[in-house]
Amino acid sequence: MPNRPDDHDDDAAERAALAARVDALTERVAALEAAADAPARTGPADSPAAGRDEQMFWALEGLKQHYGIGSLLYTGALQLPQGTPIEWQLAADADELLAEDWAPFAEHLAALGHPVRLSLLREILRGTDTAAELGALEGMGTSGQVYHHLRQLVAAGWLRTVGRGHYEVPAMRVVPLLVVLFAARS
Image (cartoon, rainbow, N blue to C red; front, side, top):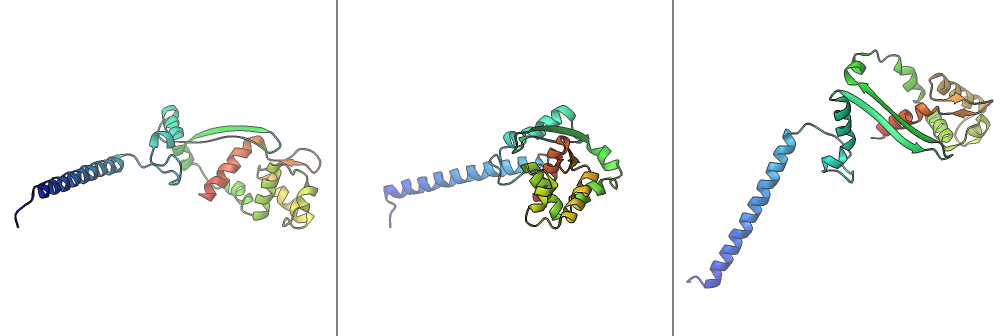
C-alpha cells in the first residue's frame, strides 16, 4: 500500500514528540547529575520549599557565610501563651563539640526522659505554673511524685522556682527545649 501524504505528517509529529521527550530526559539527567555533585543537604521532604534550595536553606547559607563550614546554630523566636516573647540564638563549633566530653550532658538529657516531666514542662510553658495546679492535672501522679519531677527538672536547669510553689522554664532554656523536642520528633 503506497504512502499517503498524511503518513509523512504523522511520522514528523512522532519524531517531534520523540525529540521533545529526549530533550526533557536530557534535562532531567543533567539536573540529577548536578544534584549528585552538590554537597549533601537534608531538610524536610514535605517542606513547601522542598526542591528550592535557595529558599529552603536560607538559614544554612547564612550560617555558612557568618561562621563558615563546621558550625552549628540553633535559633528561635516565639511568644509564649502568656505573652512572654522569647528570642534565642546560639552557635557552636562542631569540632569543639565532637572533642568535648558528653558525659556531663547526660543529667540534662535524662531529666527530659520521663513523660510526666515533659508534660510538666509543656504545661508550665502554656502558663500553668504552680505545683498545686500541675498536680491537679490528669496523669501527673501524686503531689509527691509531681514535686519529685519538678526537683529533677530544677536540678537539670530546665526549670527554676520563681516564688513559693511557682515554676518557670528559664528564657534561655525555652528554645533549646523546643529544639530538642523538634529534633526528637523528626
